[in-house]
Image 1 (tube, helix red, strand yellow):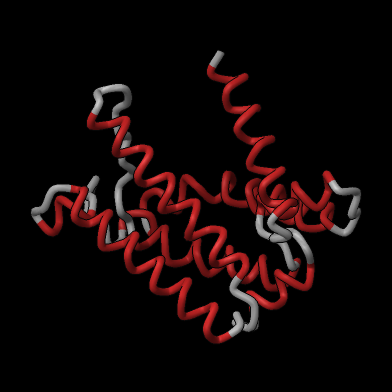
Image 2 (cartoon, helix red, strand yellow):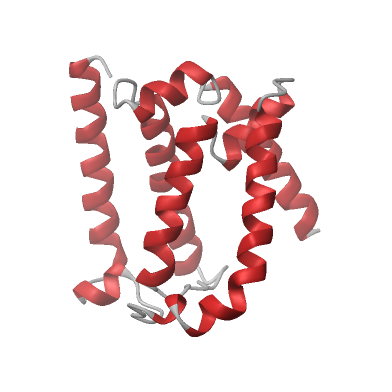
Length: 174
């Protein structure tokens, strides 16, 4: 049942990507050039909604958090590689799948690049595990733990910040 739920939510997310036009090339390019914040607004909206939903379910005892360790040796190079791939291909993983679903065959290059990158990472993982992936290991921490606060005030501040940022984007025509 979990696999069906994952498939259904993935399809719904893809539909939202398409309906919000975030898989369009001009939107991707605009985001990379900081001239069109449609993708930023979409992703920040999903983060805020997801954050509220997960913590509500957590407080109701319906889910448990599975926090990944904060390892800067993995996050920083991974983010740089992700950004480089997005800049070169014009797609991130979600938008590449959505674009392929729309019939845009150029998205196959992005998906092929992701598969090659995943394969290279799998091959290099044993060496990385003993080296790079140990640098800056802060363990399984969360922002509320670091700040020593309940998660709801942090969620409120992030939500308010997102709303103010959205308003600023709109004033600037972004």
